[in-house]
Length: 298
Image 1 (cartoon, rainbow, N blue to C red):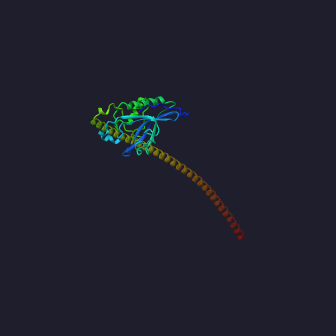
Image 2 (cartoon, helix red, strand yellow):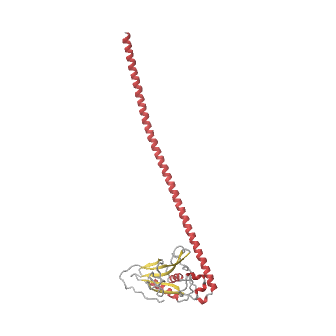
Image 3 (cartoon, rainbow, N blue to C red):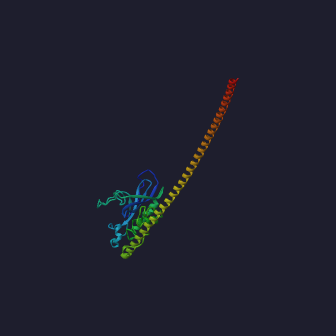
């Protein structure tokens, strides 16, 4: 790897500069996708540069950690340059010796860890840190000390924030939160590598258990909040319904009472009119009968 000078004269446009951690999917384990990280710098003119770590032995794979003897003499190797089709982590990259090896169909995600008017000095520190790391001869292990470990170490040396989206359940990046352990392949024996791999597997399992616990806690909290909302809504709806029914019943009884009063008043008046008519009629009849009788008997 070489530290290349940046050409910042390709455009007159000026935009905020960013430093991001890129996540490139490599495969999955039991349906859980795992990712390789790299650092991407975009300057104010839109030029993109990247730095990354990886194994010095291209035959090392993630599954190789199951057998430490297959790691051979792999160390952490680093690369930095323009982020284009010649950079191994670019979407358009194709292996020049085997076109079937490429990044087609892989997932890409990016997490911004810094943004500002001029981040060149921070990018320079990160790229130099990655370069130095690649020259220190650290043992490469796909699960424990790998490209993701290199990204975290370079960011730490450059005093840049660490990524936060690399845990289990997000963009899981094995080895991302591990410290770089000094040493070369000749300093490590297979038994030590086996122990470290087993420890990493247990750590991965612990991460998965922790993630499940967090998801379960979030779910139970959501259910609890949802149930509280449902009961509050039900109580409020019941209160509103009973209040509505009470108001409706009161309105009905008031209406019925008014109607009944009107009916009783009408009935009373009608009865009074009827009895008065009967009385008047009877008086008229008795008076007529009396006069008729008097006329007949006289």
